Image 1: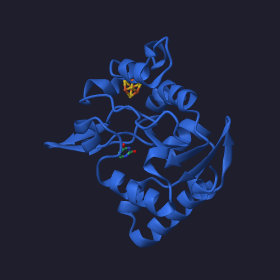
Image 2: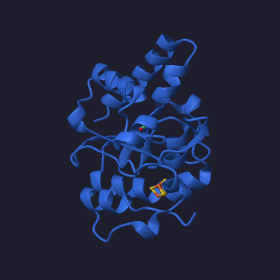
Image 3: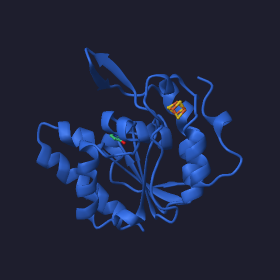
Length: 200
Ligand code: URA
Ligand code: SF4
């Protein structure tokens, strides 16, 4: 795990970053994944949403949040009144992490070392987009952005300063989909997105 830093381009703009990230070998995840799934959205976006790691669909299609979690996220954004063209969407870790069960690729949580290795890409995205509001989706993104001590369960929905932005953490949309009481979990998720919506 040498980390992504040595793969960063000299020019920090979104096209250069995306191009350089396609060749990243900063940790071992590039070996088994199909492709780097870089963040997407306008450079002028006031909101940056940070997920965990691309899933199976994202890995195949090359775009963040295009699977089931992405559909739930889109619904939440719409209901919270956050416009898609005001949003840049990315992940804490940019290559799909999985274990094989037969032919099925089962999502695996990225390790602390992988989160650290991939952090330079997220940092670069933040420095280019300079969002007003960062929505932190789940514990992995929280670990990458807010540190090891941050607890989503206790601190979700509370704006916290992060550089020049305000960050709001919430649960990961995949956790909403897996929750025993999905309606209740969705309500909490939406309430946190509504807090984020008021901040920009
Ligand atoms: N889950 C994530 O954290 N990110 C994606 O892009 C898709 C699913
Ligand atoms: Fe590089 Fe991140 Fe992919 Fe690891 S997960 S190879 S650090 S882009």
